[in-house]
Length: 116
Image 1 (cartoon, one colour):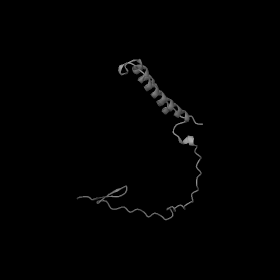
Image 2 (spheres, one colour):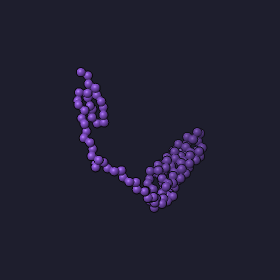
Image 3 (tube, helix red, strand yellow):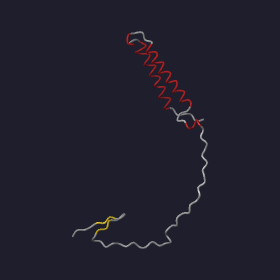
Image 4 (tube, one colour):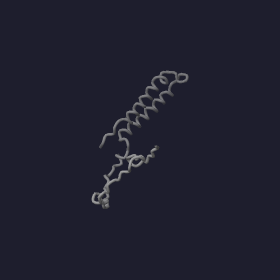
């Protein structure tokens, strides 16, 4: 004998079982809908312009210094008088200065801004 299944909310009823009747819910247990309470406007805390920025003044200063050091490193590489820049300035000093500038940039991004 084939059974037919009906799927309801949480229980599965097969065709062989008699349907169970749920007892009626008393009207006293049904909660009344809450009355709408008028919402009061909440005053927002004043936000200073410095708090809206993701970094602090110190972070931006270090970033600008890092950009300056990077540009200085590239300028040092152009000062090399050897052919194709294969001298000390183009192969050693310039790249070291550029890498120090990038390290300054990483430090500026990863350091936490000081709260005033």
